[in-house]
Amino acid sequence: MSAERLAELIVSSGPVVALTGAGISVPSGIPDFRTPGKGIWENVDPMEVAHISVWRRDPERFWSFYGQRFALLDGKQPNGAHFALVELERRGLLSGVITQNIDGLHAAAGTSDPIEVHGSIRTASCLSCGASFSLAETRARGDVPRCDCGSVLKPDVVLFGELLPEDAMARASSLASSAGLMLAIGSSLEVWPVAQLPADTLEAGGQLALVTMGPTPYDSEAVVKLSGDVEEELRAVVAALPAA
Image (tube, rainbow, N blue to C red; front, side, top):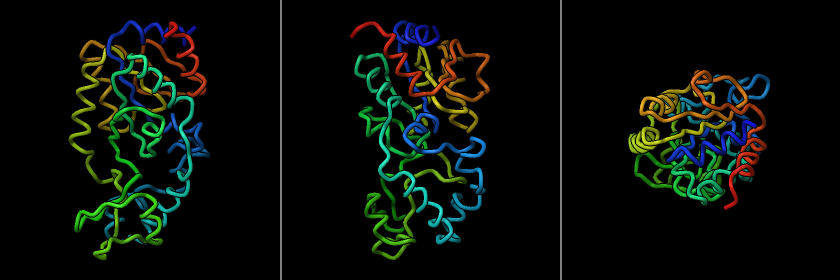
């Protein structure tokens, strides 16, 4: 009955905002970061491969790791969880999507203007001259991709050691504070400052619902928590909505 309860909340709670983490993309074949035995950081220290300082001092090591990430993400497609959010938006029940993911799958599924607070792998930039390159162009420029000006390219994602983009976080905070219901999906809600967003909703008088397998710091404050497969759970929620 939890899916039915969440469907009722989505219909009755006013503006609904989704906040998504790596777990929503797991059914698309993209591993999350910290699941024991499977997570991306299971066998590698992110501070040694994905920190802005590593990109600066050892671009070969940095791009060796990111080249593997690009290959991992290549060809991946949105899954039913992404499309469930598109359906909520189509019905006028979802006012925005905030995502920690860099895979671009929300946009690929049809979500209009997702707020990508950690950036996107769709492009890379030259910090020297400002040129921008698509993912395909970046990959075609070799193991350590360089701009025409000779500088090493940087993927347009937020690396460890970098601040999140101010505009994206301002938009995310505004959405969170205005939400009657925040729907947090596939996120451990442990990475700050994004982990503050559910608190913004709660402090403004809104409610929180969770769709994630693992524990979060907000479990005791959520009105509903669905802990099964994220794709199956969200499909069940959409199926429980009144006929459009």
